Image (cartoon, rainbow, N blue to C red; front, side, top):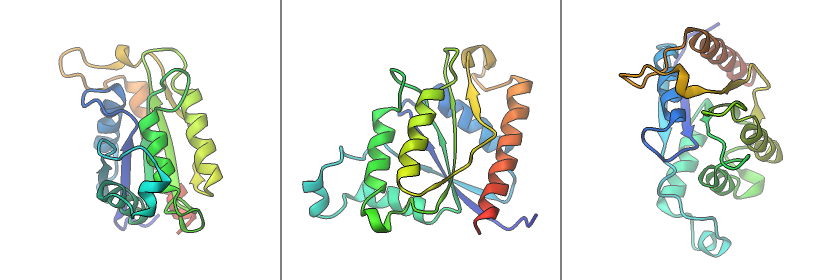
Length: 187
């Protein structure tokens, strides 16, 4: 496989700086191949979707978000699960990115989805909802391997807060390798 530079946009579905999912994303960055250039999309400034606002032109935060997806070879979403579903901030950002429908930046873009939670479900329901949203926009969501990290708090170093569970790190490595193959499938 070619090792030319890949631009990856990383989206964390949690706004909290110390979130478990942000820690998983940081672990993925350490495991990612050197030829990956990872850019973080910031969801914190994206306003709630409103067609009236959109009719005046996308707010700068939305334009920046859409452009980060447009320029990416692939998009990596690492998200928690809130009340058995997708975090509102993530759904809202994807709704903005889905506009305009016929020329959305999501169309035919390779995506990979992962998530972590202190609970046992590993964000399965949240990820299913993200997949449903991306499917509706004709995005190419990697079918597997799945990253559903349950009991994440038990897999962190108690001093540094970094993900240290060897089995989870190996699984993340396999996930990243599969994502690169997924991206190349559509290039």
